[in-house]
Image (tube, rainbow, N blue to C red):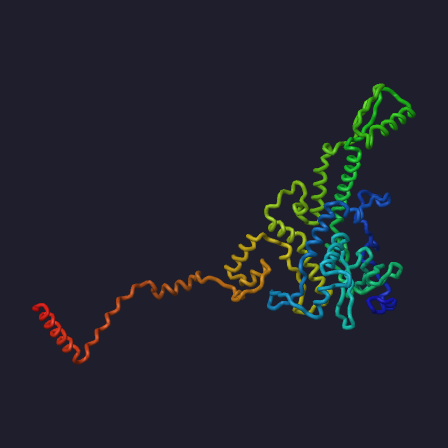
Length: 457
């Protein structure tokens, strides 16, 4: 058969002896049984069933959409520990458009959804004639099975997937591990098999769905609980059946709540526990919190009752990032780097600033403190918190010169900078040139004589 333009023959599917990665030899989409033999009664807890519970759906879609909206970029290590965004003709195209039918954001969402719901994400690579990865396809995790060769080599068996040219009727295809990116959740039982959080909260989801179903049936009966009619004496089966049919026809369903008139000592007693007596709201909140615990999602992000109001969104998102999605981001980045076979100094990185949004006052304060401390230049702060471009003179970090080390101050004091210096001697007056003094005296005599004559007249 042909896959991505390459002919794949049976001879290429070696070695001939391969054992399933799962210890029990199969890929079972059942999360767990609420009781022994439940699967024989069609009461097993499957992934589609668990996803119908609002808390499971809320956790999965919240995590998936949050990671999907983060900007995934190609980076290069320009100096030890410093990574900056870059482009490369071999790697950038597939990061912009991973395949023919998905954007990069939908591709990321499909990857994370597979991990959260099935415990494993499998991504098939497509290469060009040079061997460079040009496309990536997220596979249905329930149609992929890890295999182990006698020498320890890992292979994957792929079943029907028309998006990659493998029809449902086609024979399963076995490909080596180098052609598949495998990103598992925590591998509790086998290093090739990740375990979905639904394994831990499947029963809670089933409990919640059962309560919702019973509640819907209760309110469909006009919120009136079921009960029994009792008689003081013995009645025959025929009479009991007639009374039951009459009661169900006239006082249940749409007729619930009507006034019933009974005789012969008949008495109605309610049997079904009301929603208030069963503490339905408290039980529903408890099961939802159990689901949040399994997914490590703070209940406040799902607006669950009793979770309290959100007073510090930034701190809540920091907690959500550290305990829930950081490991998903890290594993995604490392798996994609190995899958794309990136060569140093290149890597891939999510921009988590797209997740943690701050109000304007907080951003302004953070920018001012970062610039004032010399940690960031004005241009860097403008780009990080406000999405603005550079300005003249803004490419250099600034810091006020107001702090000195003790050694510098001791050196200054040793030079006695505060000692009062002696007043400088006055500059000597230069002697007048020859003839100057005689001329001044003659002028004074002439002026005096003139004034005396004016006074006498």
